[in-house]
Image (cartoon, rainbow, N blue to C red; front, side):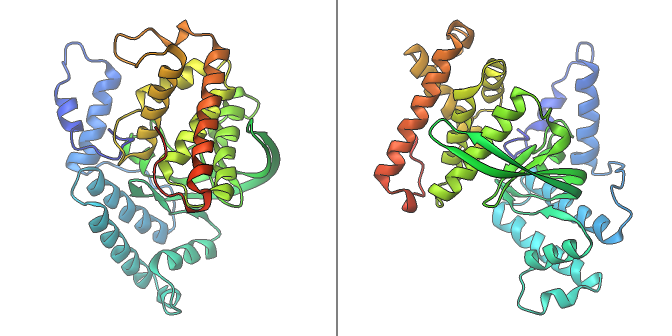
Length: 324
């Protein structure tokens, strides 16, 4: 529910807990959910002594709470957030940043940069995000994507003040571990063992696919981008293969409004059909019945088939979902 950006049914889920048999973790989560999303009086530890940053975090956590609980739709939430951020800049004597034709988000970015902070406040569908960190380092990598090799810069980020709406929605159980941009790919440094297959496959090759696709298919939608990146992972994974498949399965949903969950759903269903020549159902044989190399090959073939459809459709003009 949280990863799809919709917590409206979570209270009912926690109310169904059996006090006699539920785990301590379940009950701890129920208490934290109650404090954060029902009572809205969670005692929060301040991640900054800066009054401007404290007020900024209050605005974003209120926006995330009301959005996750359905009190805002996308447009209403966007309008509320921009209004509150405008007021924030004025109240902290930063009005001049708005006077040169800058929109509110650009002015906010300038304010954060002037305070020596790094940030990302872009849309992370379905809600606007806020990642704030204090330090970063850059390193060059060459990444194999099967159909091409790309050289790219990885920005390793540390000392986070905010890890975004997914971290907030899941009570800290999951968050963004990195993302791709047109200039580099960005890594939450502490979230990865940099010498592991997990880092190579699920970060470098996943985000490297995004990096390459941004250049080749600049108008491609998020669902297709994620579909291609997840298939790239599965084309290379070995020791992490079945863990990745399990993760995609658990975090899947036939919901196009949640691009990551929908891409997971499409990947596991299309790949299962390609590997086993049958549809995936609750009674289907487990993934482990298939050799790893067969799964790798099937993932690579699905990726190449999608690339062929992109080329046929006209790569520079493609905006719709091309997944079959």
